[in-house]
Image (tube, helix red, strand yellow):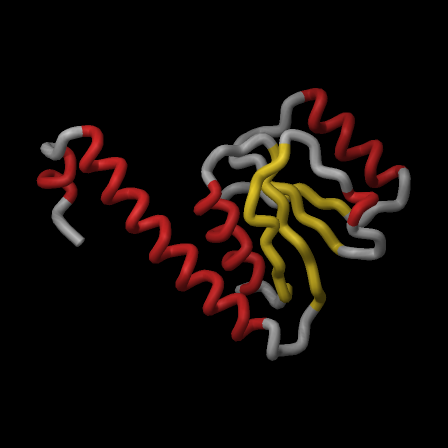
Length: 124
């Protein structure tokens, strides 16, 4: 779009608007790529943002998983507490964008002990 140094000189409102426009383009492209990846063989999975506010990052991480043979669906809204019982039998990845808190580690272990296929997707 424009060189970084020019973007940095923009007022905050303009910068947020430009970032929002870029996020929309990225999500649109990732959705297109994920649709194409569903036509290939692979395992189905769902990626869920857990306690994260950056929705675009969830989509980008879903795309990264699709590059490793996963056929990914994205839960577009991040959750404070995912509920794997709503997706029985589904492979799930949770993405926090950072190291898990102790509470999140305990919750992830609890879900796995209950037999849910929930994995942490680490940031790149």
